[in-house]
Length: 259
Image 1 (cartoon, one colour):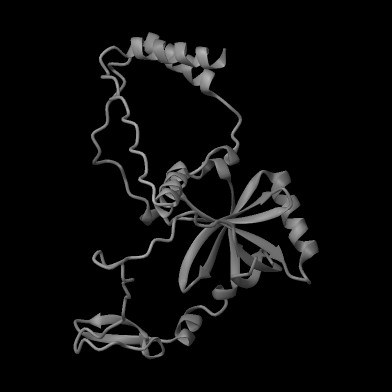
Image 2 (image 1 turned 90 degrees about the vertical axis):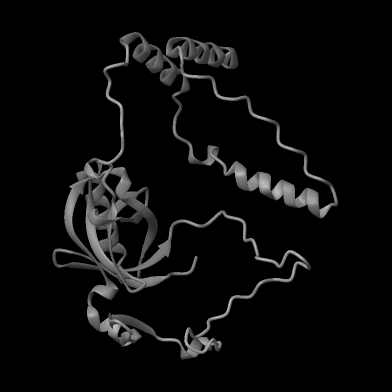
């Protein structure tokens, strides 16, 4: 893996030189845009709004519209100068119980690796986090954007899990949600029984992107000159008229599969 950032983790007066690596990868199909008549690839150009002329990438700068039509140009040096220290620092400001963090805040994982001068301090932080059961809440800057994340141990790793800022998480107060007044205890008992039968140890390797696999199969069939088979029609979902009957039937089917 190629490091995407280098700097240091800071907590108290301790500084640990580290490299940052992406901990996730995309599994989407790379599809090109084509002209329907002759399958000519579509090319996107960067053009000036005023004269319609293409602008070479080396002539493009970043700017902020300060007032209507008036821009302030920002250079790479400006981004660094905004907070030179923070652009190379993962600054742990608090230690918290991870269970207190709402899952809506979690966004993207990164892996941390110590530089040559940092293995001992890296291992010390990792062991201290393991024994405390806490995670570190840290501020850092990545790709010209201030971010917040949690530093947590995972086996021999330290993972920086990027989380969203509070203002980025939308409230759900406008949604029309039902209460529990129409839920019967017998239905809850059956639902708990079904959950118990469907409970398994979490294995992330078990779950695959079936949609992408199906698209790849269709592409292969078309490449070989075959017409992809029409998907089988799924039976309509049963109407939620008798919840007890649906739960009982679900449990019955699960028992059959288990047998």
